[in-house]
Image 1 (tube, one colour):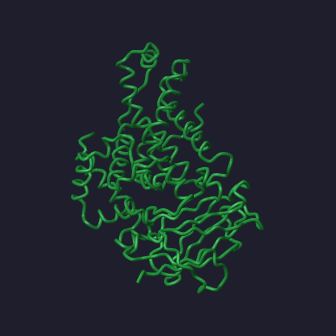
Image 2: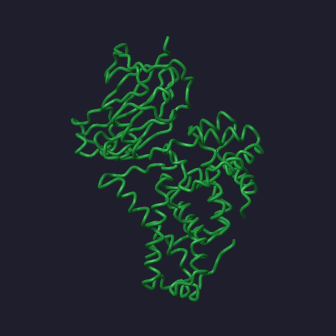
Image 3: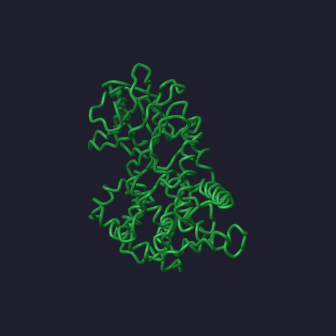
Length: 224
Length: 182
């Protein structure tokens, strides 16, 4: 039954700082399994991992009591405020059935006072001035992928002022989602500024060449 | 390395429902199983997954597994690994799967063990944090609390990725002392 046959040796775990890399999620899949198999036998490492996880959990904010999956459903059905540094990419109808496709850490929270989101409601192309005021804490871009068919898509959100870009690669949404990809962002996550959201198709997850599908423009202004 | 040797006798005592041995078994494996699932899943799911894994392990032991009792830890790990894969399949259905860092999901900091986040523990964490240099503390909270990009955090506080590991290492050591468990 045991198909993981090469548990990490304790010396290797120590030498490579496996505990800390595990907690920082920096181990490869193979390293992670080897280390886990090791700490099932090693009291020192098991204690270290447990203490580290508890330490990390306790320096985080205490989350609201709503279960995570319910928050996901709410996230899809109505614009709600989600943690400031999170951008969610949900696969259309998949999201409604709890299919998290992926997510991405984003910029740190900006000064939020009196900030509203002005967003081009799926404004495509270069006409950046076609923006609409959305006085909501979040905005969603629905990307229609019907005409293209890639196994993976990359979503790039770029702040035009400094060119800072964050990317997330996600699998193609399932057909039942009508090939739509929903990109939801919060004003807290974006901060103030102009942004472009570009969705590109990828032939595979590691593909270097991407095929732009859509580009959208957003602007987040301070409320006067 | 502190390693417990599982023997034929130990597994035989489990099969004969020896309460002391089961107590040891629970104390030994439960934290490890929880740690494994915590690393991959929202903490709200950890209790259920751990329970499922424990039930599966108990059933298998009752059925005469593992054949080599010395491999009990690896055997339990493998059952947990399979349970984790099953859970991921349930979560993702038949779709292609994108590896998700469940650690960073909102709410994943909520532990099913309320004692983990109780005031006493929070105080211990705070105490351990206070012993850190402010730069180190800010770097850690930047990574884990604010969920910021690690390279950005490292750049901001002038530390390398390796130094970040050292900072976490020192913080863990300080917390472990406060926590009072060895």
